[in-house]
Image 1 (cartoon, rainbow, N blue to C red):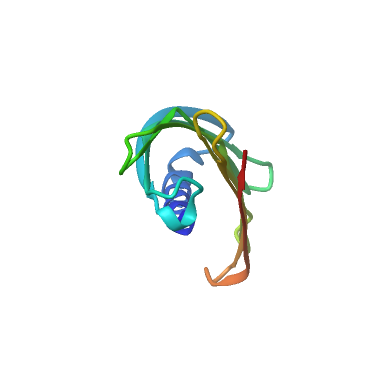
Image 2: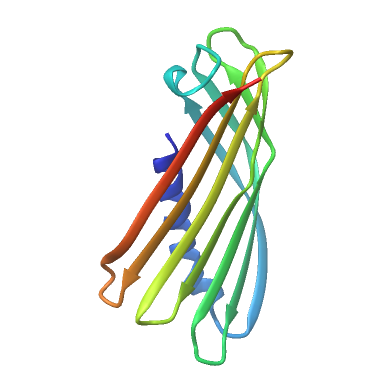
Length: 155
């Protein structure tokens, strides 16, 4: 479920980083529409839940005195979640932050992703946390990669 999301987020960061890395420091803000479905097997509700809505994106880029580029991308969601069978509405929360560093010889990405789907009443809440680290060598090949996902249902 989230691997696709994280791949899209990292690809977006890769795509926009050169645009914002024109030297010095810049901060850009924009909003992206987002939608995905949490399969019934991955959640706590017993049904598939569609999560959708706008996500505010802030991209801060700094080029240091050595020419290395530092990019911090923060995603603030304003999401709605609806059970596809029952129509039950859930509150979907959670920030995502990507920090990247490109020094030419290698590029490092760190991602912290938190998704919380809050159930109405006393139902279990679906909580997903994910930490991703990727290091690319100068040839663009993956030198280090890990993706730690924790999923829990807590009421």
